[in-house]
Length: 300
Image (cartoon, rainbow, N blue to C red; front, side, top):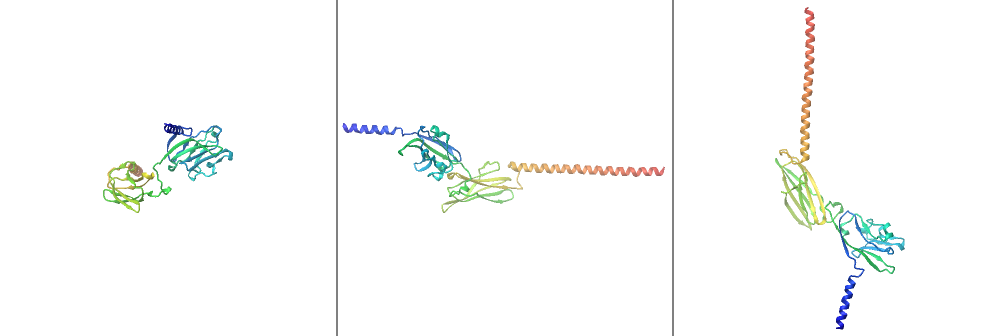
């Protein structure tokens, strides 16, 4: 019975520890890369020394008023290089215990579990804020980031026939495996593209997608690698002499402008010709009348 009571006391103490003052709830925040994200933390006015960490290892921000305001965010201490120049503190807010920070130009790799600690005089830390941050990526051309496996801009090959043009979109050295989409000049997807090559060489994909087009216009090959949020594209202009009316608004506008220009030139030429002809006839008539008048005077 004594052992049972002792076990019950231990269980009770464990439960109390689980709901102690240090058990701060986790706040989940989701944002997209390149945005600003606010991580909130509030201390008692007397508690000025604090520290922000992510995943228990990386230093994000540190402040110590007893050390002349030593702040990682201002280039002092051991702030992780990942956060240098991107973390901002509310300086005025320190007077009221606001230890919140803003991470600027968020990166996907900023995703993690953040904690804000109040640091006691004896070095003991008390957790004041826990935040689970998820930074989602956005599809964009990441060629300049030199990500391993990110494919360069695709290469487009074209072959003309009498009534259509064959277009091939080729990518090399891509990983993860890319997807591809042909689009017309209005950026509307073209559904009848066919994958004619897919090779796996030395840990990379080489692929070709083909399409036959019968209308003049601009065509885009868009290549996407969702796993690394990489998207790049290339375009080409197709001119098919035997094609019917183009579905390309830009092409049609140029064609209409050319036709209107030719019509106006024709009308101007006709008008100018008529004017010159009339002027010539008027001159001839004037000369004829002048010649007839002189003869009349001579015979009289």
